[in-house]
Image 1 (cartoon, rainbow, N blue to C red):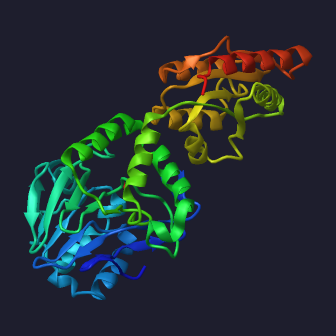
Image 2: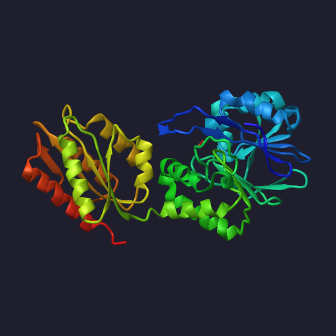
Image 3: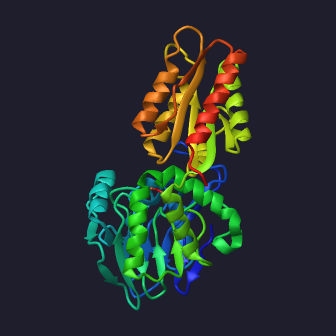
Amino acid sequence: MTPTEVAEGIYSVGSTDWNVRDFHGYSTYQGTTYNAYLIMDERITLIDTVKKEYADDLLGNIGQIVDPKKIDLVISNHTEMDHSGGLARVMHKIGEDKPLYCSKAGAKSLGRHFSQKWNYRPVEDGEELKIGKRTLTFIETRMLHWPDSMFTYCKQEKILFSSDAFGQHYAGPERFDDQVGEAIMPHAKKYFANILLLYSPLILKLAQRLTEMGLEIDTICPDHGVIWRKDPMKIVNAYVDWAQQKPKRKVLVVYDTMWHSTEMMAEAIVDSLLQEGVDAIPMHLRKWHRSDIITEVLDAGGILIGSPTLNNGLFPTVGDFLTYLKGLRPQHKVGAAFGSYGWSGEAVKLIEKEMEAMRFNIVGPALKIPYVPDREGIESCKELAKKIAAALPAE
Ligand code: FEO
């Protein structure tokens, strides 16, 4: 990525990772970017770095604007290694004694990651730092999405450097939202669903706080994907909407199958839901990536999960999905479990137990069918679908 001027004297100097396709379990079909920002002022400031492997790329980009040795201070908004991995290389290059501003939790976690005695300057929430004609304000955003996370706000240009928040895993030639248009929103939605869903209550509080602070925002510079300059409040408002997790009359029928019997059940349930006027989507777990299913979970009112019983337990992909789903703590879901079995049939009960732990409104009884569903079995699938449709909220 070549440096891009975001505002006069403020540059995006990060890197594009065109080829990453698996970001710790999240499918990044279109790669991602690791954004870092350089502010040319009396004290030259670098905000965040990049993944370790891209540190030379970052330094090369900075070098097109200024000798990296002239950087006066670094701000680390977030410790996760896709943003701090390049820090060791950067600090070595610019001088290990240069001040490194971060949250208090950031100082602890960077210390543990790097075991380096850098010149940490832990900041308070709301603390200001004058770097010349500009003043930067640090805004603590604890658990969005790590304990160390914070934003940095530049009041002169009204730019919010938002760390992971408002990002997208998207690598393209474009650098700004208006260059991509509406097509960027599905990427932003998938990112929210897979990374921030479990922090929905905190996101609603943060949005409220930004409003109360009267923060004027002309531009949002996230650490992944494109910069929001056309209508930055569009993504803020989308976050508020997604965080509310308003359930629609939409049901996901997520399943795996060994010899098509659980699949026959899933298909009968989907057909019946469609007849009831519900947007039903069958999602075979070896055809859909877990992170794409989670995007659909955001506004689904119901989730049915089906598994055959394998070795007295869940089918492996179903276990994987339940683990991932549970960690993201979806809210306001109606749920039901189903599956075919040969002789023991524990899987359905195991799914229901996980749904209880996630506080789903469970529609029962769970549906277990031995071997291949017969006509009566298919009818019971249709009955379950009708009960699910009745339990969904009206729109
Ligand atoms: Fe993009 Fe939490 O790292």
